[in-house]
Structures are given as C-alpha cells and as structure tokens.
Length: 109
Image (cartoon, rainbow, N blue to C red):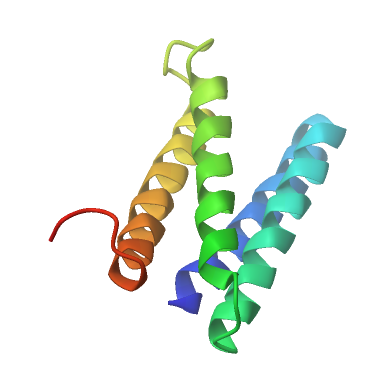
C-alpha cells in the first residue's frame, strides 16, 4: 500500500522541480515538494504500519485532485499538466478511498 505513495512522492517532486526549471515558477516547486513530502511521509507511515499513514495519503490525494480540478477548469480541460494532476489525483484518491473503506468500512459492501 505504500508503493503508490512513494511513486506519487517522486512524481510530484519531479513535477515541481520541472515547473520551476521550465517557467521559474516558485509556487510549482513549493507545491510539488510539499505534496511530495506529504506522500513520502504517508508512505513511510504505511510501511511501518503506523497510525495516520492511510489518512495522510488520502488527504494528499484529495488535495492533488482539487489542485488538478482547479487548474483544469480555467483552461477548459485543454492543457496537459492540469489534466495529469487531475488524473493522478483522481486515481490515487479512488485507490486510497478504497483502501480506507477496507479498514474502516463506511460504504456497504
């Protein structure tokens, strides 16, 4: 369960750094490294089977989904980077929501 968190951590770090290198965007590097750190920390907690790893991963995934949606709407869903954020955020939110439901059922099975 920690592998997606570590993968997303790396992807977000690379994305933030690339945004800074290509456009000089300070918000990109700050957001990318912050989300990367949150995913990395959640992956660490999940690997150690500690408390709150799943919740942090779900919250970070939801944050990525919201960021992708808020960047996609103004561009009319035409630009690739906001769509990638939207896709990764949606996919990871769905994954961690499913895992959360397996441990703490809130939807009827």
